[in-house]
Image 1 (cartoon, rainbow, N blue to C red):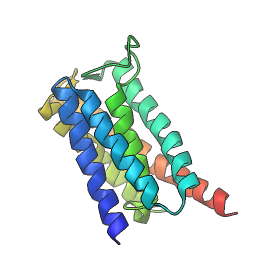
Image 2 (cartoon, rainbow, N blue to C red):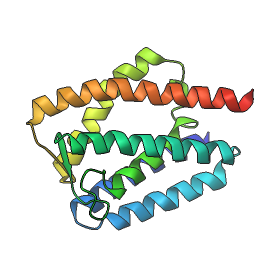
Image 3 (tube, rainbow, N blue to C red):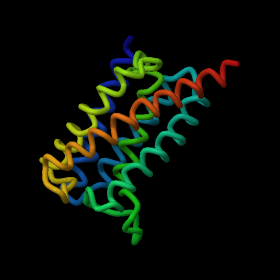
Image 4 (cartoon, helix red, strand yellow):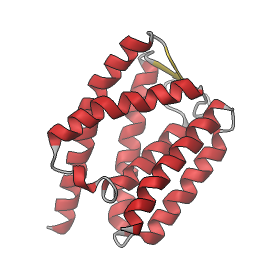
Length: 175
């Protein structure tokens, strides 16, 4: 139980560190906090190989989703990966890595509950971006309402897809 609570809280601590760091031009601080929290997660997990695979896979896919949102002009993030303007910033990848660390732990109960993942994605995804926008880490380029509606559609598809992929990865490992 402690590990699940720690996992849940560490995601939000890391999220805040990444978003506040990005908003204040010190995204490396948030990335460092996220990295430390993921290392602690690795120490606490008993399925290290599975967790590393999950983090790499979901971290990369999540970064691509956010990169698409930036490349499409929907969002403008503070910070960039070097001179690559279409790729989401490193702090976004750090958030995705943290999120991936929750899939088999604090959010494991969401696996196999597709409709709940759709609803939570449609609500939770946009709310996270709205908080990030309010803090100053991201800008909405098409107004608040339009951006929130587009994000709701995107995240109602992304979240259940990621949990389905995680569920499948877990089944393949145990087969």
